[in-house]
Image (cartoon, rainbow, N blue to C red; front, top):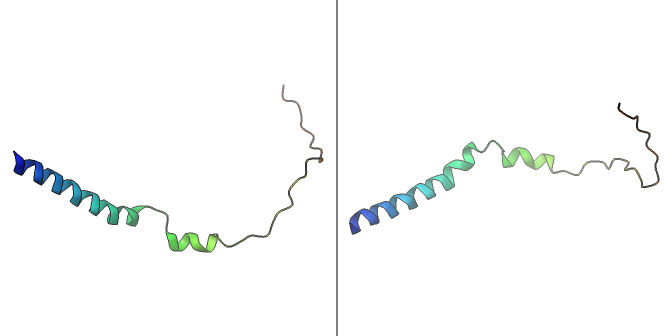
Length: 59
């Protein structure tokens, strides 16, 4: 029984280590590809609190 618990714990540790290294490969988000997107973009004009925006009423 003790041997079964040992192999169960050992298997759990092996699976956790494999997932630690294998899952990032299939993540879909590449850290290299996301790096150029992190460059600062030119700031867009933000509307101030006093700007009036006209909305149409939906019936």
